[in-house]
Amino acid sequence: MIIEILGEEVVNKGNYKCVRRWLRGQHPDLGIIVRGYTGWETVQEVRMSCSEPEILGEQVISQNGSYKHVRRWLRGVHPELGKLVRGITGWETLQEIDVIKAKGTFFDVSLESDLRSVA
Image (cartoon, rainbow, N blue to C red; front, top):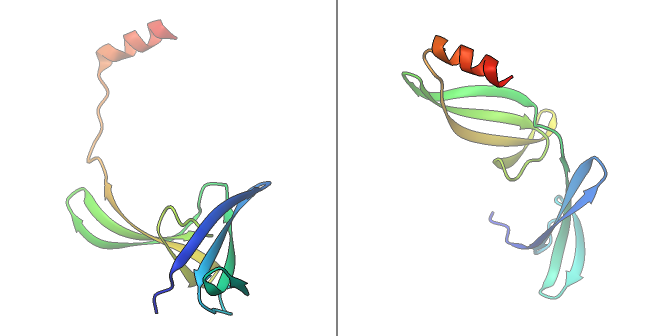
């Protein structure tokens, strides 16, 4: 079922943000049902943490050398980072990203003296 989002606003409440969404139709499992301009609407409030998201788990979907395509589960609601799902710990964010890890790093010895002169 596709649910149409009619509007959205972000409200800062101290150490967390709250996203208030207006959805078309009656969805009692998602929020409060109200009579709106377009008929029956559902008002949903989702609480989002302002801190860095905690990674709950990571699954490698594909890998080629130093390139990986991974799926991550993040604790809490972070709609800007991925899809919201209902998980074991409550609301979680499902994120699929590409990760490129360096095979090795190097440090140029000539740069070390330049860094000391700056400090």
